[in-house]
Image 1 (cartoon, rainbow, N blue to C red):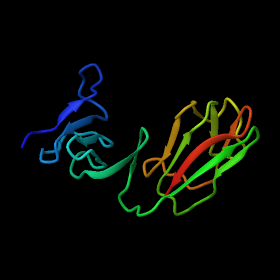
Image 2 (tube, one colour):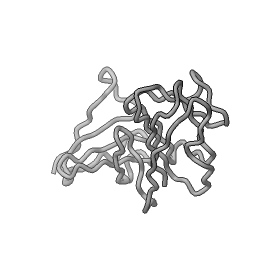
Image 3 (spheres, helix red, strand yellow):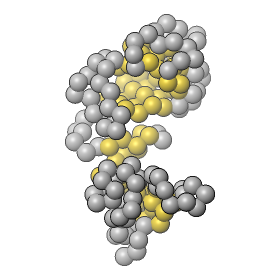
Length: 161
């Protein structure tokens, strides 16, 4: 059994969130680990994240380039939404929400708003062809989410659980 290898350090400095890689049988880091750090098991293709500095590691799943904690989530609603040139609601208020992933599946920039009317060039920008925003337990938001794009009729994929 070996230890995980740390990858993605910032100029060789040992600070902040890190990503580790190893086999399922390897020992995951247990001390000096920043909250939010991730471990990847290359032989099982599973991701794990720590929320307590390495004491416990919770399995996660990958949605595109966005990691979403699956602990406590048994189902997810998947949808496609056509975003308009005027404010379009893409998620309704959901007090039971534990995560959501919103992905721009179009050839045009989409802007998100968590506070009502979406406005171009303001709020959260989702770049073309896969720009994404994740709502999870570290930034939980249960209110309505709105979007807008320049020409309208642009597709956004949405997963919520």
